[in-house]
Image: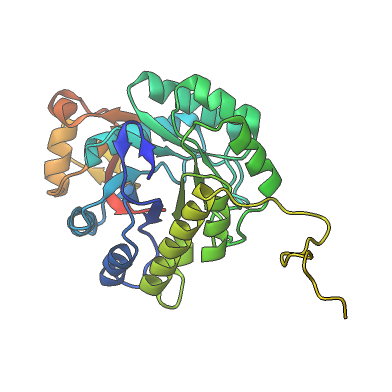
Length: 253
Length: 64
């Protein structure tokens, strides 16, 4: 099971809390999946904040506040400082968005913000791409977890660049890595776990499913299957067929 | 003094962030930033408002 900044988490599934049909269905999705971490955000207080606080406290999971929607390092740093006080945790899912259409991270501002936040005692979970050099810079900045995307946020396209992700995993085998964004189906999550990633963070795949609680359960099963498969040391693919039934002793007919 | 709270302009008698929160009716647990800089809860009583200041008052919300 994953360990982030010294904290053992009992599930490889991390769930977002946005876009569910109702608070009751959100809570049910956490219950059916056993997700160990919930991502949350901060927005202007308009009356619903305190009820949401009670709801997430009732989930009995670790909270990971995000800096979603921030487009500059300064915005993200201020948001992280506010989140630390509001949620009482030094964990921060650092998002610095670089493009409005793709919602891909701005790698330069991301490193800048991560550097400042790590110096300030934050435990940073950076939402990043699978770029190896960017990930190395984030580790140098003090990050001990990486969150490479599978595909753009909310796209449900799965792992867009499995080769790049496999390269990243191979080069940094000991860094806890969470595939964040782009997961649409349990099979996507299983694939990521089979590749050796430590956890999956998803929101839209669950919240936008016809039956969010059932999808959350399905994702948790797929993630567990992928995790067990990775530990079982799967065979490599071959170009040619190889008979599984022994040829020795075959009848001459 | 005129300040902007969460995007809405208000005219308040308050002179500190703490007083502005009370006068504007915020009762729950919130986090504050003044002109883009975080103001910790413990510093709200001593953080002075200035004419035209931008005060952000944030609460927990759903997120991915």
